[in-house]
Image (tube, rainbow over all chains, first blue to last red; front, side, top):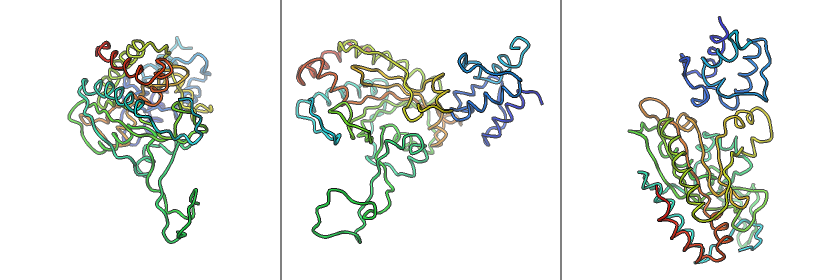
Length: 79
Length: 274
């Protein structure tokens, strides 16, 4: 399972009515990631990417969609 | 005007009442001009319903509830200054702290035919650590204009009324700032504060260090919790809210008397276009 599939699975496990998440679906506005789960999501991304996320430099747009998470944390450039 | 009243209970004089009604009719017309249905909501809400909206999770410090007396514990002839909890039956009704909760509960379980706007004048109640003349009351009037529908629609609602509020306050010659607000209960740190800081859900118009109007984003929270849908999906909601006694406070300070403030609102009403 690649990291994005793992993150999608983690989100779906918290939302029983959601079966599939489109890569461009806004996770914040649709409250699939909310204020309670946001920090847990960051910790999951840190574990899967093996790198710390700098909380002082956070750009919310990096977390908006599965595609932006992939681009921001799991591409060569992100390393 | 500068009466110190630690109970948070204040009557409005006839002149102050005229100002409140004049101001409220302006704000209500902003809503109805935008197609809002003007409605009256119940004065109390079931505790069970407010609990479903996480009210007692998020705002326990503000909550006030209503209990009937336990008639079996009644002492005939007594003139009590308060009732002890054991003289009361369980409290199953709550006083609303904001006018819009009732609007979402009214639409509970419904499929909306399209984007919808509703305006209400609510009497709202908040327990506070301290009260101060008209600036901070235990009970006050809140005019709200509520948008329910698509994500784009509810965002446009805030953009439109945010601009209109700024124009109105400017025309009334009240120096203001607009700022992102974090709820004090969340603001004690912890997980919830982080996302609020990155993506504020509340912006306030502040005059004389007093928030007199706010723009609020709820995303699809109320749509999900109240099962309100549009085209099969939970609706998004947003609202603009006005604390009317606070407007009275800053207007009286700026204009020096209730009639002068009322005149200013009447004259300004025509100046600010939709």
